[in-house]
Length: 232
Image (cartoon, rainbow, N blue to C red):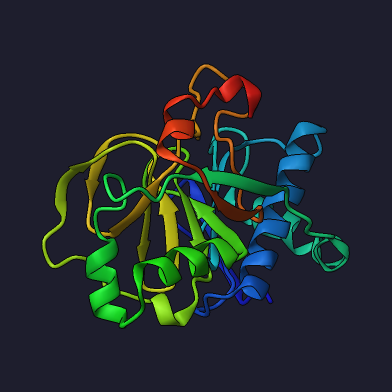
């Protein structure tokens, strides 16, 4: 349920859906996000520059020369019926991951922290149907839940200066995939050869979207090395 809408600086508003982090709340955020995307595409609303969904908030940036926060808030309040009837069905993805120890460098540490064998950790990871709450931190990076609570581990006390593109990472109830080399404080469980962000794609630069579902399957190191994105 939308708890309230308020100004977020002079050229943005924030739609607040509460503090809980679960699929129900996030589904409402994404419903409003996608309805607004559709309205913008069909020229039913002007002045919106960008919409940024998170776990339980939606930030809407607008052009102050074209519209105002008051106008946008009024418009969003007219969408209650559409939001109630919105059918949030995200795309389902099966993503390959190589769990070779060369890539899953934190598997043993995760095993020590959880008391679960490495093989069981890998199996549980593959059995989880992950839900993408949002894309954030960097372009194309999915924040996915909800990891089995038996695999919950804290963030690293000392983040790594850099981990490689494609690293599959976990922390607390979440799983993520790094679309590029970057610093990181999460534990690395494996690596995928899939490309998640293409800046040359004007229509859909990010492969994954909020509301999508992801399940992983294991591939060998050889299959990882021979993977061709064109056949994905």
